[in-house]
Amino acid sequence: MTSLHVPSPELATCVEQDAGDGPRMSLHLIDTHTHFDVEDFDADRELLALQARQQGVDALILIGYVARYFDRLCTVQDHLHEMAPQPLHAHHPADIQGQDYTPLIQSPVTLLAPGLHPFYIQQHQDGDLLKLEHLLQTRRCVAVGEIGLDTYTAEMKIPAVYVRQQDYFAQQLELAKLYQKPVLLHIRRAHADALAILKRHRFAYGGIAHAFGGGIEEAKSFIKLGFKLGINGLVTDPNAKRLRQVVQSVGAEHLVLETDCPDMTPICCRNPDEPHTRNTPVNLPVVLDTLSDLLDVDKQLLAVQLWHNTRLCLGLDWAYGQACWD
Ligand SMILES: [Zn+2]
Image 1: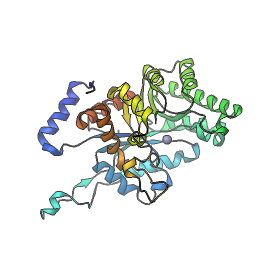
Image 2: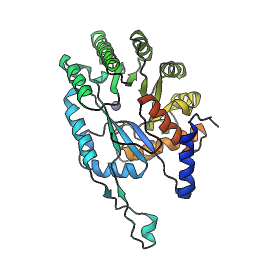
Image 3: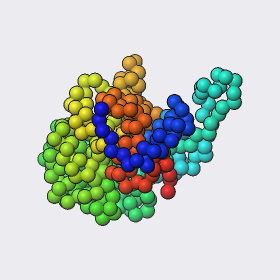
Image 4: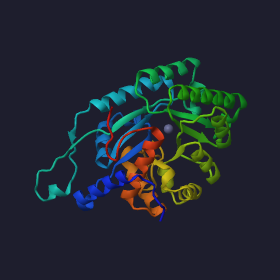
């Protein structure tokens, strides 16, 4: 059994809810990495938002990756914010008993984290850093992200391309320092270089190493710099042995949940007849279930710990289950 490190008031909140709601105690989760603004969700974004909230996803972080979509990111946030609570006509045990039970559900709270993604380095222009800074000045942004280094493909390894990635990464770290924001890191096959750049820039605001794909020693190095590790549906794959070892080695205290939707669909949510099943924030509890099994920690207690971790690394002041728009 992994030990948990949650302040007692938050655990008390959890226990009180247990006493009040009996066995159907509600879960409260934060999806720390979504691309919920992309067009994959245009047809049913509102419905998915309501379904996710019903599953306990109280908040979503909307990630920016290229400047030309920053407006779309803000529009989606405004739309979800203005959405009135709506009835969700889903089957509920009370319906079966002939009672009229149609709860009103609200959208999850959303937070912005705009950044210039290393994989799209060829699309960034110098003026984009100014657009990013303008957004940091004019909207409430919880972090700068996603930013980092990516050498997954041969094209990304071309020296001139990689130097440009490093330059954009460094400039965005300086912006994050200026506005005192944590960062959301995207790093593929470049963990040592990313750590070196973070240290060289004396970056001290921490954040999340999203979709963490490094080894145990690298995980410890990021944790030492104030980062939590973002864990998504990849962990539900029994073949993801290295990731599972990292999770078990660092423990619940250093993890946060994410879907990375529309990608990284948990194994059990994939349609075998489709080459790519869209992931959505509704699937976030599946990641929690897997972590609960891997860490041998009660699901409810783990949810409290992960909420607390997210608060810490993003500088949020939300008590458990108390996400708010302001
Ligand atoms: Zn992403």
